[in-house]
Image (cartoon, rainbow, N blue to C red; front, side):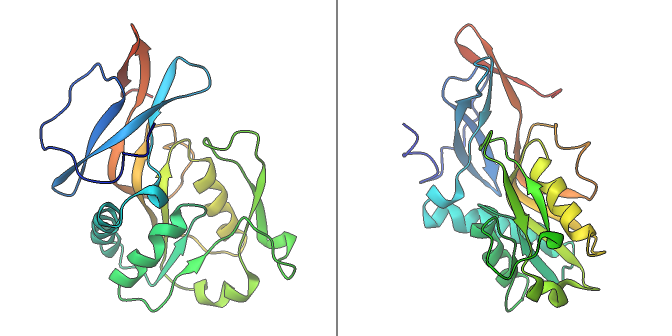
Length: 217
């Protein structure tokens, strides 16, 4: 059961490897426990963050820390990356003094166009192929602006690479990405713009029934 996670902050004491069911990270000055989830191969695990399951207090703290990072990019427009990036982007945009943000979508409306879309996959939704869309009516909000992407987690980098490719089709290059969590290092060769996270977590390898972090992956 993971329903008790993401609801309150953890003690400040550090946890040490090997880990059993959780990994502790820092959100600003506070500690937060993330549940460990085994990947389908059974040999590896990642720490999980579902911001739409988090308590408002935890969510607000994550948004506050992400906003601190976002302001360093001096963005003119915040773009929310679906799905869970849309939970975080409005708060980050408000903290940056913006009146709105631009949401991308995986749900096609009848006026969306194929030439303003790209295929999209995710580590948490294997085999669930979708497309990523930008409402063509929102394009003028992005042109010739400092665009900052906001997402919940970057892991393999596939979703962010697709997002950057989508904007690139319209000759828009983001100044960077702000995520709640950077997960493993596998995204680094796929994402072509600067990425910052409020906190990070490694890949974990099973060892005698427990989990040991592998910071090389």
